[in-house]
Image (cartoon, rainbow, N blue to C red; front, side, top):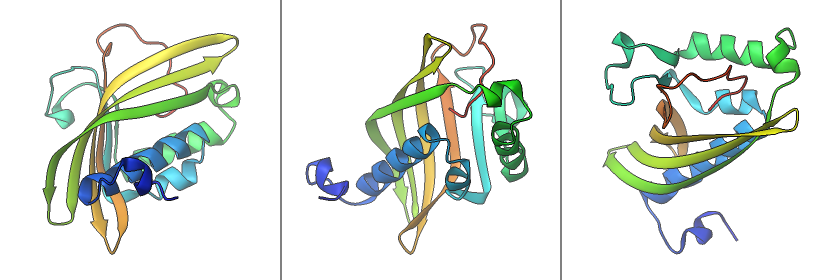
Length: 166
């Protein structure tokens, strides 16, 4: 049975995007950063804004605002073993749900969803809850992330070091 079969007969751009988003979550939980990196378009932007209402990410303060170069540097830092947070990185489990199609125009699909992520490190479980927006371009059946925005519900609170990707 395919993943699409589990979507209760849902088909089209939303079903394709949901399957893509679930695959991304699994890659991140497995710390398969090379696989995660391959999901991105060269122009893609990964954003974790501090201001919960901002839409101008380039002019705002963000926890992350990564283009291809910065994503590669972040992945290197997380996987090279030089950073104490990477050596003792938290184990994570994500659940992504509440999918809503925002736009399906041509080969671009934009989907809003909710994510609950639990990080486990040194006997402590820490939840991270966020609203997500994925903009995915599908070409010949292959999706590439053009933008991922992770809006943490507590983004304006003091947050500890994030030793993993959201």
